[in-house]
Amino acid sequence: MTQEPVAREPKRQDPLTPPELVALVHEIAERRCKESFQELFGFFAPRVKAYLMRLGSDMHQAEELVQEAMIMVWRKAASFDPAQAAVSTWVFTIARNKRIDAIRREKRPEIDLEDPALVPQPEALADGIVEQQQHARRLKDAISRLSAEQAELIKMAYFADKAHGAIAEETGLPLGTVKSRLRLALGHLRKELKEESL
Image 1 (spheres, rainbow, N blue to C red):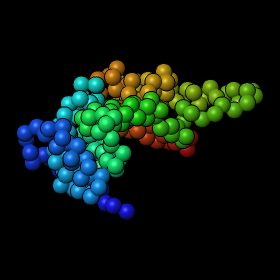
Image 2 (cartoon, rainbow, N blue to C red):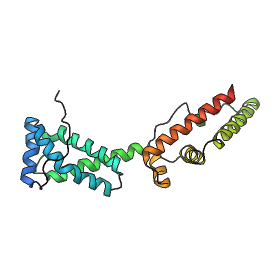
Image 3 (cartoon, rainbow, N blue to C red):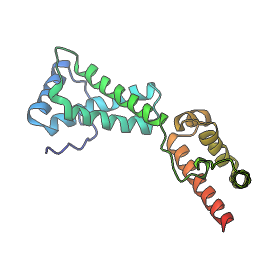
Image 4 (tube, rainbow, N blue to C red):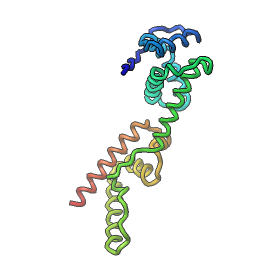
């Protein structure tokens, strides 16, 4: 198995011509040439990053997507056909597709099956109804003891059923911050509910 190259920052600042770009891709495809990949990476990484940020990715996500796209360039170099598209079109299409994949993943957030808000409701027997009401009251009380921001994030994610990406847009927080604050809030809720049940 061929080891993937480590992407480094560009050595060369002047633009590469289309024939030079094609030659670099062929070197990668035919000889797995790491130097050619580094030169191609140095040329495209800042351009692809700027493109992804114009499409709405934040800086951190754009950098991750550049890495993913350029690794795909390394892996799929043999499939590049200069008769079908320019190297730049091919690379930017890979990057755009990586961004689409990332958006799809954001819309399907991971669900914690241990989350008390997701516990299935028992059959509606009299004692079950009382138990449900007590559980709902305990959950509401536990949420009220969270910080205002954590409580709002919990309500948006689990009661309004909003995706993490949508919450990030609405609150102006970075996506990673939304996810970490939700995990922290859920941890507080679990602890509160566990202590109440003792």
